[in-house]
Image 1 (tube, rainbow, N blue to C red):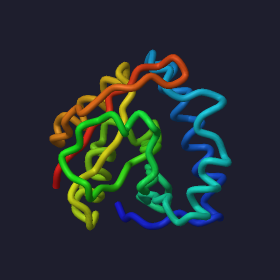
Image 2: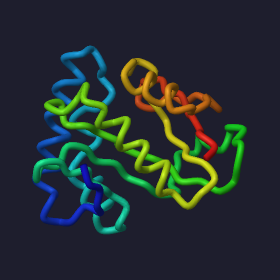
Image 3: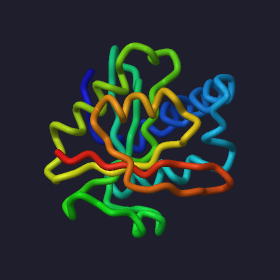
Amino acid sequence: MRFRQAQKEDLLEIEELVEQAKIHMHEEGIPQWNEFYPVREDYENDIQEGNLYVGVQDSKIVCIYTLNTYYEKEYEACTWFTDSYIVIHRLCVHPEYQNQKIGYHCMQHIIKTCAVRSIRLDVFKRNPYALNLYSHLGFKKVGEATWFGNDFFIMEKVL
């Protein structure tokens, strides 16, 4: 798998990946994403800002993620380990490629290529797959938040 910055030409494939993932998550009892989030405009903005990345395998986008320093106000109440960080948003693996360690390889790539001291993220409390991945990679819980009636852990991994 190779990783690269997303381009405008990728937008339709990214939208299809996310919509398939939303359907799959709901089938698994994980109502994390819905018709309001994430949406096309989120990815358009990410591409415009140069923050959206794709993982490509066999000429197909199999995963996406956004990296920036933006965070919700709930992050301010957390006790962080470092002040040099990047935040991961909207990490998503196409359902056809799940259970093939794509998410793990994606996270390993991010960990190896980030020029910061830590990675921050929030994870839906009812997503056992994401919780297991981040725990396995050494992320530590530093806080909690509730957005749109859903509970999340806020986590950090020191590099």
